[in-house]
Length: 226
Ligand SMILES: Nc1ccn([C@@H]2O[C@H](COP(=O)(O)OP(=O)(O)OP(=O)(O)O)[C@@H](O)[C@H]2O)c(=O)n1
Ligand SMILES: C[C@](O)(CO)[C@H](O)COP(=O)(O)O
Image (tube, rainbow, N blue to C red; front, side, top):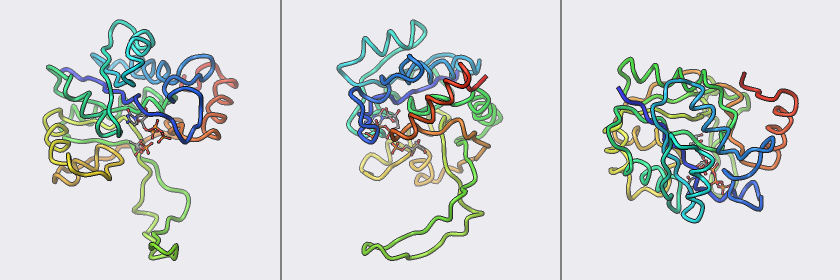
């Protein structure tokens, strides 16, 4: 059963504010993309990697990802990039969609997602309990409600899917402009989404503070995931 990883790496990194697109920014002297690809390889559960890169950086992305990977051009939104990767996917039963921005994701998380998929689930996501109290607010900035924290989870990647399930869910969600992850397309398509434990190290490098945290983890230990 072939399992392919699809790595969205075509974002601009606006919130990080760097000089390069985020996946090409350095962490411990290597591009974020290189860390994400290494984690996928180290997991031992991935047969092939498809990187979705900015159209003007395809050769650079291929060099970073290495010969056992292919590279395709991404789109304007993350969901467009995932759809571009899915269009290039051939002969795979399962796909793990994994943000390049989650550079320090431990291989054990990747294995957990893959094993849940192989056991027969259609869609699997890694999650962590939420430690802040979370509010919903109205358009004027007033609190509208407080969801019970025990029912909330923060969602990470990789998110794993049976390939035809994700293809159908993303096709059905083509008109949606509010998809923040791939599981959301599945939920709206009526697909049950299984959760497995995530890991704090799989945090998304989004802001300069996140990158400083990642840099200090790498400085303290050459590979914080080991
Ligand atoms: N059009 C896009 C937008 C995002 N991504 C990828 O999706 C992942 C998660 O997105 P995010 O962290 O939001 O990255 P950016 O879109 O680059 O960040 P920002 O919103 O700050 O510009 C990243 O690996 C990013 O490269 C992508 O492939 N194509
Ligand atoms: C897919 C994701 O990483 C799950 O938490 C997240 O939703 C991506 O959000 P972003 O705004 O594109 O970084």
